[in-house]
Image (tube, rainbow, N blue to C red; front, side, top):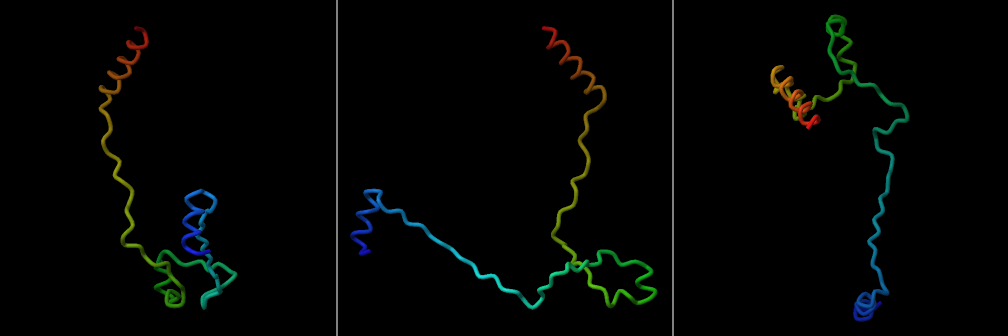
Length: 92
């Protein structure tokens, strides 16, 4: 369509433009139907017999965040005080 006709149809809401994206997926050089299990730990037995040299290891993620430390608990007396306060509030 010419640009003038297209803008006119859009203005009258008779035309809807849609963007269509398509992707081509091809088998790469490392394609395999079997899932290879990567080693995650280096054991003393692997070092002793030298098998660690032939095994594939999972890459280590240095930017991963660890678990947050468990801290910030309420004091037991404060817990009891809040429970008693809730009981009295429910009683009126």
